[in-house]
Length: 207
Ligand SMILES: N[C@@H](CCC(=O)N[C@@H](CS)C(=O)NCC(=O)O)C(=O)O
Image (cartoon, rainbow, N blue to C red):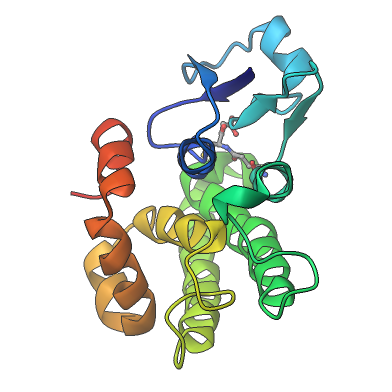
């Protein structure tokens, strides 16, 4: 059985979605946000971050994008991602990597701004720059969605759920919905989805 280390309102959202879509049973361990890290958890997740997943064979991994790709690979019948070699595959990999390496870190710079400067007086400037960088990333994704329903291929994939998770963390979701109508179209469809609603009940990602 899988073991998922997660926390409400965290990047565990997309991994919980993936496991549920795959119908894969898993043990869920909520890791409270603490200043002092638990050494046992640090051995699994050296940066003390969730999500972290332990595979049924005991191998553990962090990094939400890697976890998504691996779960899609291990559960091909669940349609979590366009299959390798299919037309949507390149977009899936591109946008998942873009979101985890550009947008997610910008979001961390907003919510953990004190880590990104040695000068306490600069924290607000780090936050402002983080929001500007998030806006730049979301605008790119909005343009990518201009003439399509989903980020990759013609079906919903984990990339879309990942995007909904990230945009829900925008500090001004009303502005996000107005400024990026194509993202909002995708997000609105997901907000109506039964599984997303169920996950949102515990994660409270959006009202
Ligand atoms: N690169 C990691 C980022 C994970 C991450 O930042 N998780 C946040 C919760 S959404 C966290 O655990 N933060 C606690 C911390 O950084 O101390 C991934 O994509 O999984």
